[in-house]
Length: 174
Image (cartoon, rainbow, N blue to C red; front, side):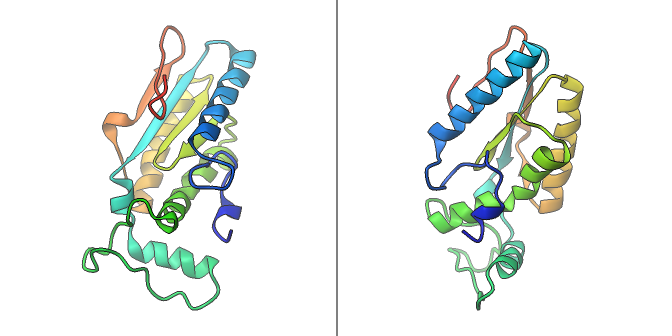
């Protein structure tokens, strides 16, 4: 709870009563809301972090944990003590840490940019807008924010798809 209370509603992986089905329902709702207001104007920007779990910097994870957890948080044990980066896959603790780590990006899109059609499931996210120029600007800013966080965006998976005459796939669903 010390982590999840600061998450945006549309950040859904590994949370009680959430998950992939929830995220896909939210995407459907965001698309319906957009279509009612703008039709097929605009598009969707999909992003993905490169080697997300393996690249999370330990010192920043520990700094955030110290801030959130007031008891004696001293050490995050990892498989490779020399690497100082990465968290294991599959562990619920690792998943919550990973959700938290990119939260500044979530809050930038939702709170600063005021985007209704936004969601993230672990390292995969989307932004919906009626303006392709706005999506390009958000894409540039997310690259900048990710770099400041010490994580990288996957160039191959960071794409803007116009809605007119195009379909897209999110979380392996078309």
